[in-house]
Length: 468
Ligand SMILES: C=C(O[C@@H]1C=C(C(=O)O)C=C[C@H]1O)C(=O)O
Ligand SMILES: [Mg+2]
Image (cartoon, rainbow, N blue to C red; front, side, top):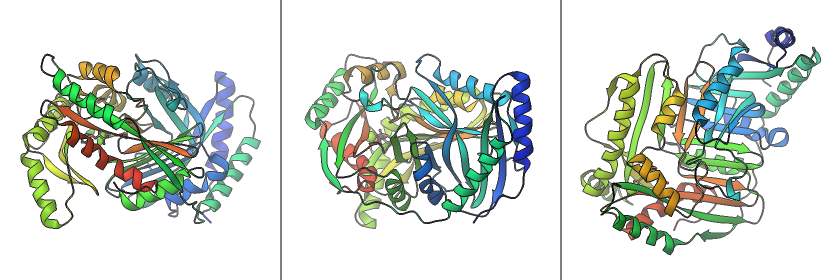
C-alpha cells in the first residue's frame, strides 16, 4: 500500500474554505506528494469502478513523462469557434488566481493541471458521433499520478466552497487512501470480441482524393489532408484499459493518450508532437511523408531510402517544415531545425521527420502556440485557411478530436500537445477509427488509400482487428 502521511492537505483545505468564504467563490486546493512507484497503467485501470468516464492517460514517446488522472474536480469547455484557445487559457488562469498549491517539487506536470483537447474544426457541422465532447474540453483531475523518469508524484486537487468544513478533508483523505491501495492491484482485463469492421465509403473517398488532385490545377491550394473512417462493432462493451494496454505494449515509440468524456473514450498512439513547452524551451515536429516498413532489414532500408528521395513525399513534408518554422519564429528568438528530414520508423510505417526546437520569448503561452500551429499542413493543408475550408466542404467525416491537439498544461504553463492521429473513439460496443493522408498535386488515390490503411493498423490491432 502506498501511504500518504503528511497532512498539509488538512491545513490547505481549511485555508481554502476560509478563502472561499472571503471571496465568495470556490477555491482549488492542490497538494503534491512523492510516492513509491506505482504502475500508471494500473492506476488508470483501477479507476474503473469509481471514476469510469472521468479518466485520462498520457505517455510521451520517450516514456519520460506519464500522467494519469482519475475523477474530475473542474472542467473547462467551450463550444465557441472563435476564441476557444484563449477561453481555455483565460479560464485556467482564473482557476489558478485564487488556488492554493502545495508543491515542493516544482516539476512539470505535477500540481494542478488540465488535460484535454480541441476539435479539429469547430466550424464543421458536428454529428452525433462526437456529442460527448466539445470544441474545447479540459478536465482538472481529482487525483493525478505523474511519472517523471520513473519517479512517482501524486497530486490531490480539491475544490473548496464556503459551505464546506473539515469533513471534506476526511472524505478526500479516505478516498485517496482507498484509491492508492486499489492502484497497486493488477487489473482484470476483458477480452475484445470484434464482430465487424465497416469501411466507410472507400470508393467515394478515393473519388474525393482524385477530385481534390484535379482541383489543385486552378486553385491556390497546394495540399489538403483527407481522412476516412472505419466503424467497428464488438460483441461486448469495449474496455478502454484493454485497448490502452495493447497500445502501451505495441506502440512504445508513440504518444499514448486516452481521454474519457461522458461515457466515450478518445484513445490513440500518435507519433506526432504538436508542441511541448518546458520553461522557455519549445519543441515541435514536422511529420509528413510516409512509406510502409519492410519485412526484412534490407527491404526496410530500401523503402526508407526511397522515401527520403521521393519528390512527392518531400514536397508534402516541406510544406509542413515551412509553416512550423514560420510559426515558431514569431514567438522564438532562436529556432533550430535540421536542413534535411530524417526517417521516423514506427511499427508499421515510416515517416519523414524534422524536429524543431525554439527558445521562447517571454510570455508566450503553450495554448497560443497550439492555436497558431493547428492544423499544420500535416493535418490540414496549404494554405491553411483554404485547406480547412476544402476539408469542411468535401470530407465525408466528422473528425471531432481526430487530427487535433490533445494534451496537458500545468499551473506553471508547461505542457505538451500531440496531434491526435492513429486514434479512435470508443463508444460502448462500437468504435470509430480515423486515418488520413496528405494529398498533393502528385497524389494517386489508390496509393493514398493504401497509406491510410497502414495508418489504421495501430488502433485496429489494439482493438483486436486483423491486419489487412
Ligand atoms: C493524417 C495522418 O497522418 C499524417 C499524414 C502523413 C502523410 O500523409 O504522409 C504523415 C504523418 C501525419 O502527419 C493520419 O495518421 O491520420
Ligand atoms: Mg502522405
